[in-house]
Length: 83
Image (cartoon, rainbow, N blue to C red; front, top):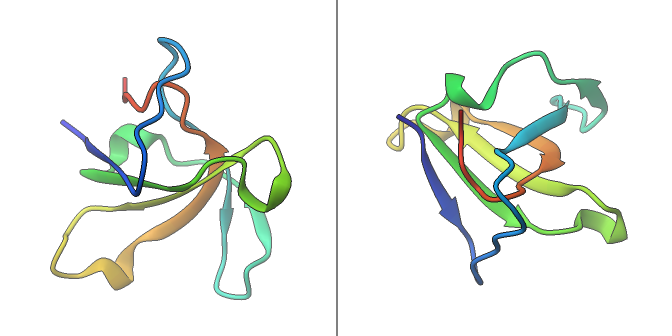
């Protein structure tokens, strides 16, 4: 089961689960996301409508003691749930 964490205020838009659209690679270039949110144990909502756009910035990882293995995603937090 994935634990979702909201940095700041809680957001719930609807009953849609989290969607990843792109991930940011080491050079911060956007690449199409191919991993599902359910592949991670933790997903943090960092910023709604990141950079003035309609998508959200999220951080996904599996080991809280090794967050440097996490990945930044741009997508839709929606209700903050994971299928």
